[in-house]
Each structure stands twice: as structure tokens, then as C-alpha cells.
Image (cartoon, rainbow, N blue to C red; front, side, top):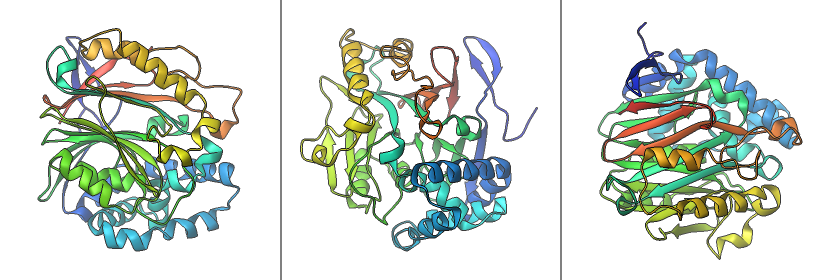
Length: 368
């Protein structure tokens, strides 16, 4: 089998088929979008329908109003991210859908009324002095709605004049979790703060950050952006740096490493920004997961990919644990689980990926 949907990899010494597809994008922004849209037409339409339903359930808005609201992000995208907007137009044209469809997928975090939905994810950043190899490692359990588990893919991106990128994203999205050829890595926690504005949607900002050559450049991009909503972005560099940035319409705060490690879940840790935090009431397990991750990471001085998997597979406070399973007590639109577990080796420019909960899914090796 060949083509963009199949990748034969080595897992524990045997050949296997990666369960997450890999799509290669190359060329101008519009050309990359066109390939994206043509290759993933069915998945893009499925994601749009899933998010339309999720936004309706969490906000009560009808589809026409959702489309009108999505278009309100266009002026800032035209100003701050014109090339990414070209790529989004290519996605729309390639999939035979409207620009509003692509905007909804990329602004789903801003449109879904997160104060009614909630948000989950746990990230770990380890500097070289805390790993057995001396290399920077980043890890994340991405927890989200089950509807998009099988419409999520890897992209290998070769843009003109910018670093090559390996990125995990939902079909139709232009940005998410990944790293680039300079060794810059990026992971994400959604945060729930007061207020969303018509700025750059989080997933568009993620793509901009992945085009940076250094942590300093990425940090400057984030600080200079008119972000639409709140998030925590974990940045790592093969050179050894690791840093967290809490991003909000109210400002940006740095979360530096403690003893060589940055840990984060879904609440603000900065004293000033935490004054606008809504997560402690909406996602009370965020503090439990952070405390548990901190406790687990204190048990070892040095870490490798195998030992990090043990943390990512932890079930303390189940089902709302680091390795998250569906909580049947929650309303259907707010039920989330770990869809993908990731470990990045920024020096080797490789990712270990488990499609599903890491407690029961094998990790596979993907290279840039």
C-alpha cells in the first residue's frame, strides 16, 4: 500500500502500519492547502459537522450564527496571518467547502464556549539535564472529544522559505502540536479565562509559532500576537531550553522550569493571570492532574521515553486522570478522553505516538 495515508514504521523491532495517517504538504500556502483539502475532504466535512454539533450543544447557537461569528476572525487573520489565510482558502477549495467551514474548524476553541465545555490535557517538558540521553523531551496527552479521534492526522509540511514541520492536527486545521527542523517543539493546554476576542485563533497562532527558528523568536511571536483566547504553550528547543507561556487576551506570562521540568494542565499558574481563571470550577481535576504529575516526576532524577509513558498512563483520580477515559456522568458534548499521546525528542526530531489512551495503545515512531 502506498500514498499519503500509509506509513510503514518500526515499532519494537517489527514493521507496522501507523494508525494515524501522514499527509505530505509542499509548496506555496495555497498549494499546500489544496493538497490538504483534496486528500482529507471526507475528514474535514466530518470535523466540521462534529464541531457544529459541539458548538450548538455548548452555546445554543444555530449554524447560521456560528458561521457569522467565524467570519469575524477574518480581519485579524488578513492582517496578522495572510499566508495562513491563503492556505485556509486552499483547504476550502480542495475540499469543496466554504471558507466559513474551515474557519469554524480552526476557531473551534473560541466558538465552543469553553466555560460550558471544559478543557483537558497534561503536558511535560524535560530539559536535557533531566533525561538519560541529555536531550530535551516533551510529552503530552491530548484529551478531546471522541468524534475527532479518527479524523486526526500527521502533516509533514515543507513550506517555501520556512522550516519543515511535523505536526499533529485535525483535518482542516492549519496548526496544532509538533516540531520543526530547527528543533523547536510545541505543545498545548487550553485554558479557560474570562473573555474571547476577535483575534488570532489559537490553532492559527500555533502554526505561526511552528514556523519560528528559535524559542526567542517563538516567544516574540506569541507576545506580539492579538490572541483570541487563552492557552498555555509549552516550547522546547534542541539546544536545551524549555519554557511555558500562558497566553491570554489579558497578557502573556512565562512559566519557567522548576528543577529542569515544566508541567502544566488546564488552569493558570501565573499569579496575575489566575485572577481571570474559570477552570478551577469547570475542570476541577486540572489541579489534581498537575499535583499528580508533579509527584510522579519527583520520583526520578532522569527520564527517558519509556519512563515518561508510565506518567502518561497514570490512572490516579480515574476517569479524570492523566490518562483520561470517558466520564459517563458528564453531558455527552463534554465527554472527553485521551485521543493521542505524544513524546517528542527534539534533538533526534522524532515523535513517539500512541493513537488512543497510552495505557492500552502502542507507541509508534514517526520522523520528520
